[in-house]
Image 1 (cartoon, helix red, strand yellow):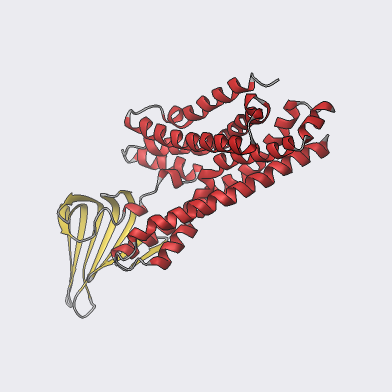
Image 2: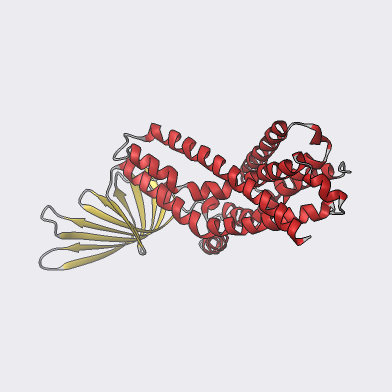
Length: 355
């Protein structure tokens, strides 16, 4: 039976990888097409739009994998059913549970690989792509280092250690040069909050005025700093919850709670990451009734179409319910997992019709 396990698993895995390649190619093209209307802003051109679409592919791979598993499982098992191989297996005593087990094992192995991509590759790639695009569109010079984000604003160089939100930065340093490129002033603030009209409120401020003869240091509770740097420019360096690894999301939740900042959406993102393998297993369960249930009389094309709509529906429902959870302040665990539980119920209900 191990030979049959491998045969079924490999057939489904090959079908899933093929579907994933097709879907990923389509969504990469759609991403590129969506970026074209942004070209021409600042230094952002068509080549950079192509680079953005390619760099974000790991993120799309992670997000689209459950849908690809559903369609791939239907396609792989459908090909075995059309050639009567499944009928022969079941006639030889190979149970439906054994078929499901074979598919689940290979599906979860693939999910493990995709999970690693989502944990270690996708967050870094997405952050790099977003930052590079935004800064190219702004036309400002910038450098991302281990000490934070450096941005040039005229004769000033701004270092931002962390961005809590687009309108709130922490540990900000502003180095101002004179016309002869000599350091003129250094401002260090514990926090900067956007007040509108290109004005930032600096809190916990230390100001160093540098001249040839001396350095004068002043401390202020707050002051106003005028700059063309906008919150929208640095929205891209805000850590996106859906692009964070599970470990990073949990660490960030702790950091935000210690600083008195709302962390609900990051906790919800953590549970969404943790439950991703569960979602993949549900998609595999959902594919079984399409092959062995009442829809088995449908043509392969109709089954694939129905599976595609189901997979897209699962993805969209999860996205919408996530926003609903944030708006109505639902429990983060429930907001992240209720769509999966609903589709699990649908899958188990449809499984009852299998004979």
